[in-house]
Image 1 (cartoon, helix red, strand yellow):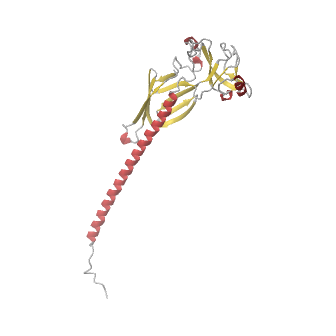
Image 2 (cartoon, rainbow, N blue to C red):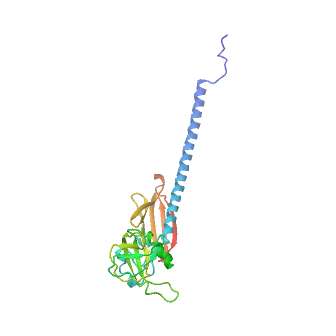
Image 3 (cartoon, rainbow, N blue to C red):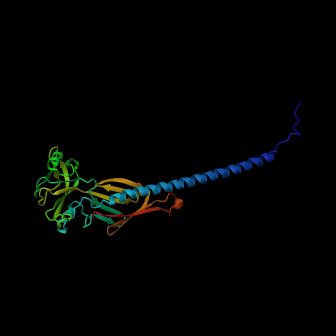
Length: 279
């Protein structure tokens, strides 16, 4: 027996098309809502990443800025005449802010230092520093000689002129040299790139001095860190960096670039103030 399709209850074609249209509009709205939500999530995540990268970079920068002048002994003004042979930009302070957009400074980052076991005389092209055995024999609490490396910049200090009783020694003069090479084991011989110009008696301190330079590579939007000639990227997506010195305070402001064209006028600044204790 054939079914009676005429009396069958159901949807007309028009009703079906109308229902499909409504479902399509609802699905499209839900899809658009998910797209907007995902875009907002990615934007917020990008903001957080930029801010986090900026804070990490600023923390690293501030930590090293606090080391400005570490390992540089106080020296009488008359004894600073030759310092420009290694650092032409250096003034009476161990740092320089360049146009408010860069900073460079001196510091003994790794605490490498020693003393001369014998006199260094004018014309000498090498100096000797104690090895581990002589440190033990003489009870000298100093750095090991093997930590000195080729191309290190060193300062040699003459401490024959000091302050009053219980005062920090003030060097009468100092000389800056670059190490051309180093000798083998035993008593360590450090060959200099030039010759000693003044007399340094036995016991004169010798410090490795590092030069650090932080600056903005605006073309690539990167904050760069240069240590003794070697350059590395500290942070990317940097729109601007500024430095301002006020007494013993250095204000550092870092602005991370906006995350998209629609927010091109909205960066993410982070800043801190660092107290320089060793200048």
